[in-house]
Image 1 (spheres, rainbow, N blue to C red):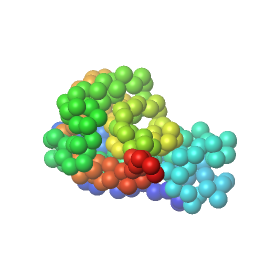
Image 2 (image 1 turned 135 degrees about the horizontal axis):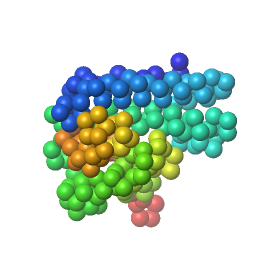
Image 3 (image 1 turned 90 degrees about the horizontal axis):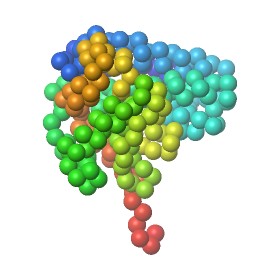
Image 4 (image 1 turned 180 degrees about the horizontal axis):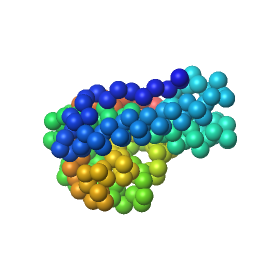
Length: 213
């Protein structure tokens, strides 16, 4: 198979009590597993696309044949989004951001609390299923955006520095319909080290334009 389900970097119960073990098992094994399976199935009749990374496929959806474009958008996006999601969380995570991400948040949003409020609000307001992101723009700036379904900022030419999943399957067993409560609690499992690595990747590709260059 071209695409494979990555292992969780910790036990299903490792993010308790913020995210319960049953949700993690369903979310990783069943939901992410289905995106991988469906992505591979969509690519079966296009062997030339099977060697491309899922990121490359969703970066230029217009280059994907029309008959599988929707499937690649949804399942390729789901695969990329979740592969990031598991890594940007960790047991005993959370706390205030540190390093470069702390500087970026302070510079762009004033302080971490204001950033959290805006990020959570964008997550609450995303109608139906989707994601809320801190995304990097080509010029090097960052912004909060939300996307529907499994759409990735990559498809808009943006870089997903980190995002939170606001599909009901991400929180419903524990939080029911209380999405704001889940969004607020989620900061307790955020892995700032991994987010700083992702920010570094973004910054190395998108240095702010230098005067006279």
